[in-house]
Image (cartoon, rainbow, N blue to C red; front, side):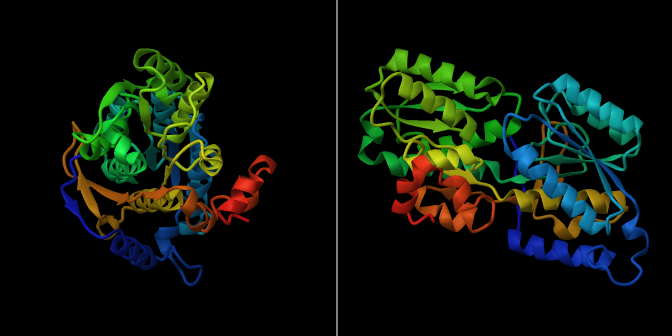
Length: 365
């Protein structure tokens, strides 16, 4: 679990970040920016492609920001591990051999990647941990405030349960134990829920896979009884979909409130339909841009102090400079003012023919 040792307002960090990069000459196209526009090569390693966000948001957003900061001279070399930790280590080794300037790693397994991080450092390559705090000698980290995300989920579930919080049982569907974020989400949710709800069953879901969440939920229904489950804590939207599949298959009606995270399109549509209660929207543009800015500055040998807003520690490395970003709760009433307003999805993308009446009901047109 991350130890948050220092904190400053995110807005100040973003402003400082812009000032720092302007001083480096990388944010506008005028004048001679010197070494700041060198053709930096950044290796981007993402963990899997089952979660829609990585290919749809993180990769293109980071490529766009690197191009902007380097006036088109920077290059992002990309690899996706498809959930395989050994493959990701091999991908990192290949990029180290190829002598990239910086590695940005969203680890499949935070412990398993530590060897590759150590190799990178030995080769003089800086490493930015992205979204998940990898172990090893990390230079910088950017993610969302993961314990706060868990607190947001827990509070939303508690609010949705109301008086039912004490009358039945909830199921906790946590993420994979190989992902340190999962422990932080769980800790944040538990800090809100403990003592206020009865947890009937709790699972750590292998590889975050929706089908594993379906199997776990089916087991929970069998053990607890479908009439006894009043709510489900799901750590992300993909698993929420699997959970709802199991609930429907068991004939549970009405569906209990189910949480989520990532504001995936399928999850947002389920919220509109009234099947999923909420999700946590994480502004991926801010996270990806922060990673790109950290990577470019490190590649150019510049200081990153001006954009840091927290300091964190992993099991192997203390006081890692970090940029952490808060998440935003989204229910039916908030879709228009969050993911639609920010341009993540259009109302047309969300409102399929079968959802037209539901969209009209919440003013999503």
